[in-house]
Image 1 (cartoon, one colour):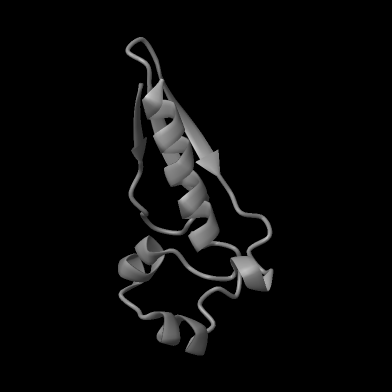
Image 2: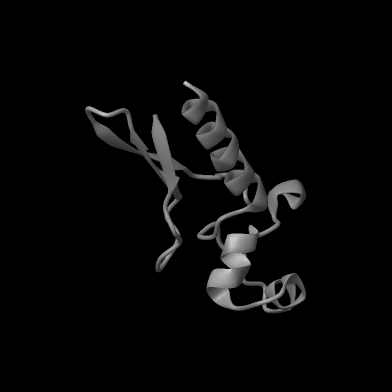
Length: 88
């Protein structure tokens, strides 16, 4: 099984994974609905790179004022899913 975590493009509407099993390709999305909680209010490294900002600038500009960003938690979950599925 092959899993690709799609790059971030435009306004964020979930972390997308493309999953291929040799016969079909499906898209799977993860959306962190609790992104206002302090423990999940951290942007992923991919989000920071996409927006060309440091964590400090992110918080100064309050760039996470809505939930349209990839959180650190969501990206780590996507990596776990990728690792598990690719073992099959």
